[in-house]
Image (cartoon, rainbow, N blue to C red; front, side, top):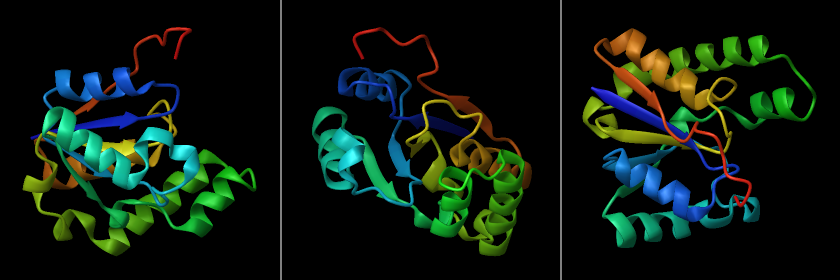
Length: 153
């Protein structure tokens, strides 16, 4: 099984959508807690769903069970908590939610987990993919869009 991940920050729409299409993504699984914020630009839930369908016939779904809680996210982002603490809490949350048992693997086959963070190393989308690889086995993870960004983005 192949699970991809991508963040939309510092990507223009053209690069974002072409990266997904080139990778053969069949479904974008939105793992953001808040996917309707004006700060999300072209990746606001309804706009993203429309663009994915019309431009590339890519399915879209929102999976809030794969998002952190607001309290957890605020503790890390707004109150300056440590990444290690956030990671531990999020891993515990995924275990509590039993995501490896409650998710159908077919949902994530050739799917791309979407979040806002530019890079995956400090983003929960990476933690989700790695957690599922650990529990399901046979999961190949690919992080999209890590190439050097153009200054025009």
